[in-house]
Image (tube, rainbow, N blue to C red; front, top):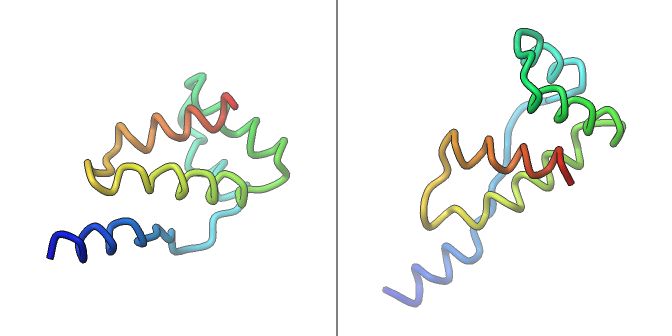
Length: 84
């Protein structure tokens, strides 16, 4: 069982459902004047879309499947993406 579980965890992937566009992202961030929100929006506009953010975020979150994905982890990963 131990090897099977290791295999399954190693080969899981994260998929985010829904259609997120820059306009939708702006809507989610419209009431957030934080530096983080502004940096994220700026980065997504620079990248000309949310695709790169979504791919990067899901790849980075893979590392947290064993320890857990929560609000703090997602926030940290979004901050890292926007600052890279």
